[in-house]
Image 1 (cartoon, rainbow, N blue to C red):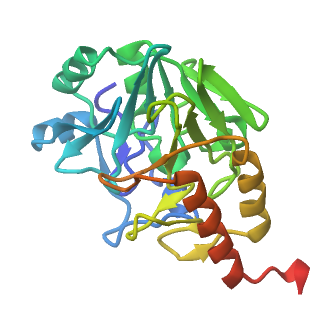
Image 2 (image 1 turned 90 degrees about the vertical axis):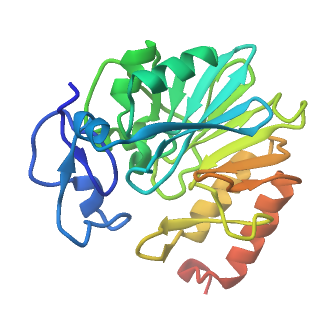
Length: 271
């Protein structure tokens, strides 16, 4: 399976040869300026990619690649007494990565925020014998169907004690975030990918339908997401890239960021 095609631009592995990447052709992503290009896990290994593993917070370890692949995101291994959950996904995987993750306790479950971060999720699922939780609203975007992928429905799902997926629906209909009740010494943590995007000023977050094409998210979608997150306390918000973390007062940062966003948003239904 190490020769299965991987889109160079988004880093998603497909189950067989194809000419195009529907994920990149969608308006929420883009086809690379050099046109559609493909790689594979074997090619990434031969070209010198190596694992990058580093602590990102208390009980939270970042896992990426050096040099970075696709759009440069890193995954997060959330280490808890109830089991280790890998939040979001990267493309690169090799024996050294597997060894380092096993030394950290392995992976009991995987959950991914949205299709741009599907990466080599089936390879990771097989390597660690772990299910991959994807919201059913994004079923059509799964590029390599496999029995390891668990499609769930509804607004919330507790995948391990104190670890709850929330279908915020921002960016993609199935866009999901992960809440860790016991993170930050019981103050809670939110793992948001770019469903709730930690911006350069890390006191704030933002919400977009398409990041590369700068299409803002719909106000009604943001209000629904806020309503679903309201019951959950969280001190930190972990975004999708290295160091993109709101370190304090995360729940309030999300609320005030949404208020700021909505002040500038035009909602035709409310004109």
